[in-house]
Image (cartoon, rainbow, N blue to C red; front, top):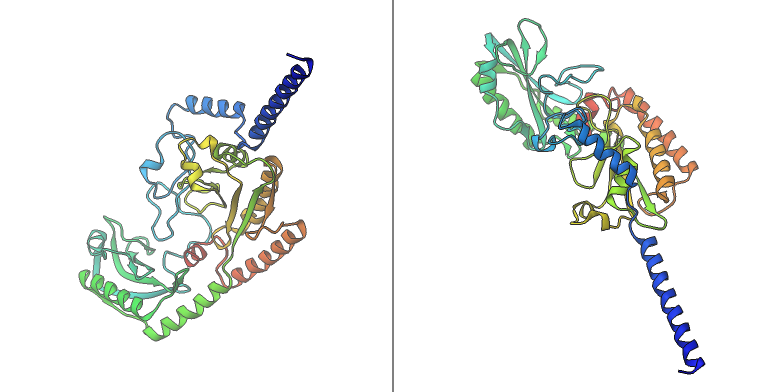
Length: 368
């Protein structure tokens, strides 16, 4: 073999080695970022020490037992149409009853004598909805003189049946009102009561006005966090979000920032591709964007949700090498964030003036 042939062979080997090294480097650089091994080990140790206790489980309202297994933290569940179960405190703040004339049609039912809670429960309609609107029944407790959902062992001197005027599906219409009347009349007959129904056309008109107000003052904010260079694995996203207080959601690919009070909707939501979270090997799933969301009317103003959303987005972008944009991919700069914050303050003031403060029971029902 001549010196020239040997030199060419060596040069070819070096080029091949360089190509392999380059491809390996690019593969590692473009591979989804993985969670820090130390943090993963600590998390596993904490779960082992927990030993199946429920100390790490977020408080849940109307929880599905399958969601509470183990000691992982999960998203608190919230259903605005159902009362809190026994043992779960009712959210503090104004308690104006489950039914309120501001957002409900209320039909009072007079009784000749007292009715038992057991009889009322047995007479409840099979479904508590008229179309897409929730229907609720309350009794005036003979001992406490308070309106409450009928309970066994209690006695009531009057009842009232209500249907919500509007929600995010629209305003109460004539068909839904008629269905409400049928359900309320059947309940009244079963408890030997006499109902009094408001005029349908007046209530439908009131529902449309409320729906117009709600539609004009509903706000659901969303930020998109996009990867600048390497993609992220689900574990990497979850690890960084957990450092900010987010916990696992009920739906794969979703995390939430819960409130400190049981039974309330989460302050913020964080979501990414569900398929990536469900992959056979999630560590190899490549996530290039995730979304942060805030349902403004559902969260109390005192929680400072927008400030926390803004800080969470900035922190995640910094720690995960990403940028914060809107849904169209436009960068959200500080000046834009300031404008959004100012607009939100005006929205809060408007909701307060209408007696529908963000995060209040009435606002959570109306904007649901």
